[in-house]
Image (cartoon, rainbow, N blue to C red; front, side, top):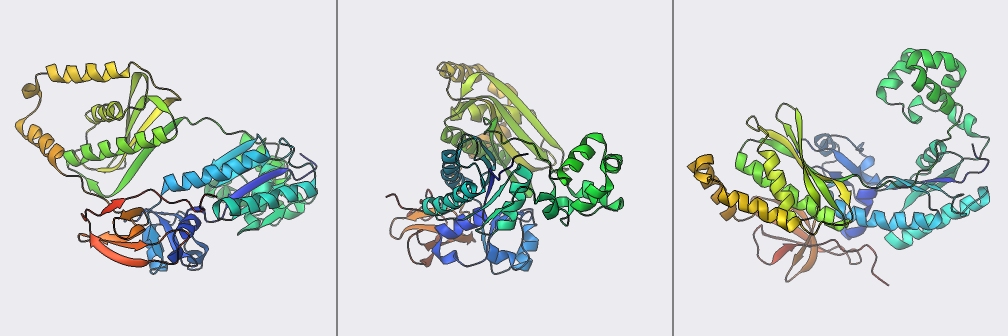
Length: 452
């Protein structure tokens, strides 16, 4: 292991909720809970004000509502969070070429590899400057842990929360770890924790005292040896630079199982649209279209189709997803749908237009009356003629022709309530409109910091 605390772990504080508070002046200092708002939804992130009531990540949303009925409940805006994450990751890459993102709001950095730190003093300076830069660029706060290994740097950042910096000095690790729960170690989840508890081991120090042979007996050779080494503060895992994205996908879980086949088709088309927007936003294309269907009985099916070349063409992805859906029986109902693209590349194949054209010609020459009933043809026509119903998700951005930029506080019974404010304004006024008001439109998020 290293002799200096030059591995840094950054963890943004209550990231999604903090970003929403920064974007919405009326929510600052208030309990904010971000996640799926339906009966099956779970909490993605909550503000520290909400945690006072016992709310935490991964909690069922219904339970969160009972604990904090007056909190603001918002649907995630992942595109917005991703933009902020890219700003933060850019700051990390200024410190070192070895940055290992774990999620949108969390990453390891090897400061030594970038020459940003070589001893405790320089590591502290680098960590303090990073926190200050993040606040200037995004307006948000992050907690920083510094140590000689990844495991300890992550433990340090947890101790630093919220909005702090903690350094674990080399040589003090075992003393620090000894009284901690075994769950603090990487790879120890509920099942492993139960195995150790039944063996009389509940703390990291007790793992060290038990000896390697006993831990191997309880957990098996591979897991036992690795866990015993970590209990002795031995963690040689290197910081690994960001890996290439393997796929781009989107999915939705529905509050009530969908039984109507036409509705299922429409949902798949909508998901394909979102997937392509995300694909294009990342300047990528892909060869393999994947459809995911979770049915009423929780059985999950995946179907895929590989094209002749990579594409980011919406019509190609839509048509492939529709073909894949035809091979799936959704009679009993659908609780989740997803569309993804894999086999990614940073270019598109020029002759894909020919592929689309060939598919269109094949459909045109097909004997349609022989393969489709009158009812199916009628359903298809109604689907094409039906106006799209706009969905107003709580927390998402809107623009009104008269009142300007705002965000959705809630919607229902044909009405949508909007608060009109921006990140640098005072808390704004609330107004209510019809859901089909022609002067109200979805909008892109505003930056948290004005340019210049």
